Image 1 (cartoon, rainbow, N blue to C red):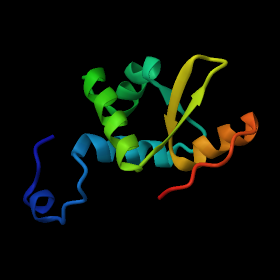
Image 2 (cartoon, rainbow, N blue to C red):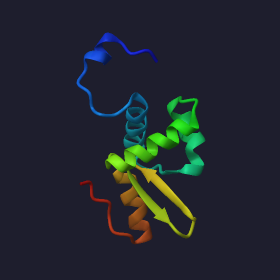
Image 3 (cartoon, rainbow, N blue to C red):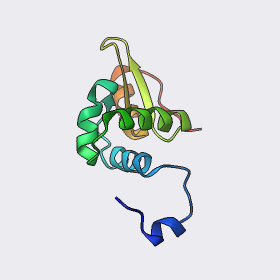
Image 4 (cartoon, rainbow, N blue to C red):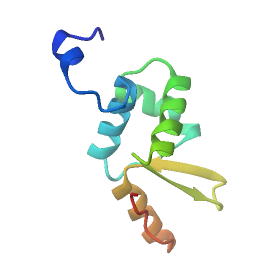
Length: 101
């Protein structure tokens, strides 16, 4: 999507358009978590054609503390989601809750 003048003049959040799309999607789906193995599905959900870009955006959102993640040893995977989704998963797994810094 080409940016509009309104997009250019809006205050910068420090997130790329793809990062905002992922953050907004995860925030609006508090029952969903995604692993790196599910990136193609997440890309399809947000209308993005490049799963590698989504993978990198998940990594950078996690590093920035914008989204949460949880390692689930029983599944041998790390899952990403909104803090609400990850806290729900942690509660079911009896892990301490995610605290946003």
